[in-house]
Image 1 (cartoon, rainbow, N blue to C red):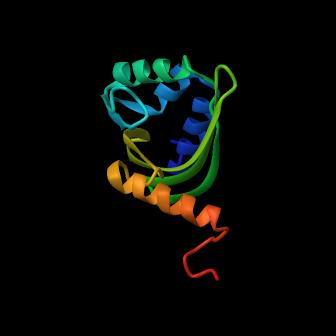
Image 2 (tube, one colour; image 1 turned 45 degrees about the vertical axis):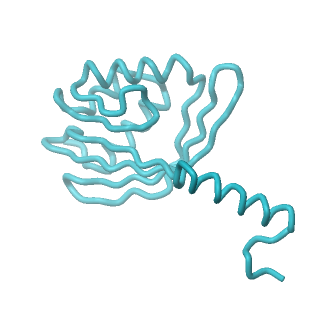
Image 3 (cartoon, helix red, strand yellow; image 1 turned 60 degrees about the vertical axis):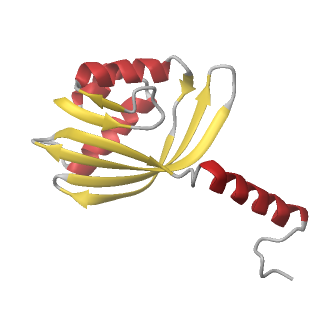
Amino acid sequence: MMDAHRLVESMIEAFMGKDIERVLDFFADEATMIDPHYPQKEMVGKPAIAAGLRWAFQFLEQPGFELLNLIGRENLVAIEVRAHHRFKGGKSIRFNEVFVAELHDGKITRLQAYPDYGPGGIQNVMLRLQRFWLRIHKKKTYSDK
């Protein structure tokens, strides 16, 4: 049986290779994958996960993850990555993300993504305005003179 760290690293490699069948091999039959990037945020079972991956791969020319940190134990792993996906048509996106994977008998039973996007709604608008103000005043923080 593959250790938890190697299993997660191999699953990420399969994802970057857009190899749906190989990605699914790392999941238990009734696994749950939760990721806000997909139309169906919570996918339960391999058929639902496969459908989500097919949806994602139709838009992604080249998915990419740079592994930053990988910690955990036999049945629970946290993976910090820097995502750098290139979409068909050339547009790219970069963001940091943490995945938490629960494992049982060498298979992922639950995988949840936590993207680092910050707050939404009115708080997001206020933060953007504040950051814009700092930028036009050439400051990194409010304490800069």
